[in-house]
Image (cartoon, rainbow, N blue to C red; front, top):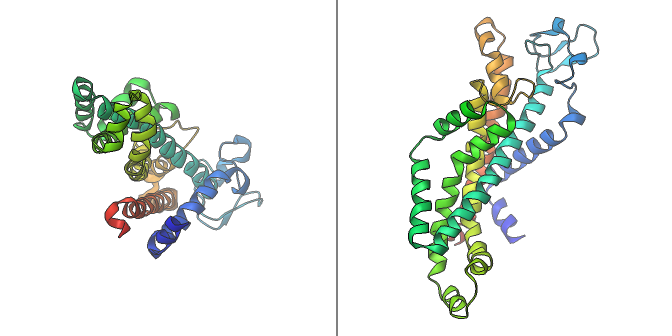
Length: 286
């Protein structure tokens, strides 16, 4: 409760948290609140393609509040379903990267020596390449798909968590309680789980919160390039790509609205992550 009270002192961060909560609710309950199922072909009518916002469907059963796209899909429905994929991929990929990278970093910090040097050199090699390049290479090998996008995002993120966990583990490894545990013959794996892991969590949570926004943006970039999720499961990035050819012909809503939603999502996640970082940082507790 004390953490929540301190968090709420920042009105901007509180607003971002409310916006993010609404986005999450919209994504989770999209099948129930969306006016149309954009995946159901029997609900689409090509005669309704590229209708402007506020226009009614040809049969009058639906009003396209945000317009329709080139396939006659309701933009509001497509955006809600696309938000499900963008947020889902971003959070799942970051969570897996946190587990993988955190485990590697704690093992490196606990083991030391050659094991630490080898694992950290692998992390350095990965970090020497841009995340988008790593993702593009993996997608080219694995081919587009939701699972493969998650794998590509994990591969481009794990090193950040590994270096953070290793740095925190090195700090904790030299403290008296860890030295005492070793003196009593406690197994290294038990020291890592019971002592190092709990004290490494705060910085790992901060890095993970910041990486969620990066994962969402990277997934949108891959989908925009046609290398992300399949066409049958469009994310926000693919919705933006589908409408770019119509921008100069006045059909702005097909790309503009998904782009704005993506922007709001990334900004909200970043603001929440920055506030969490301030509160978990020892200097932010003063």
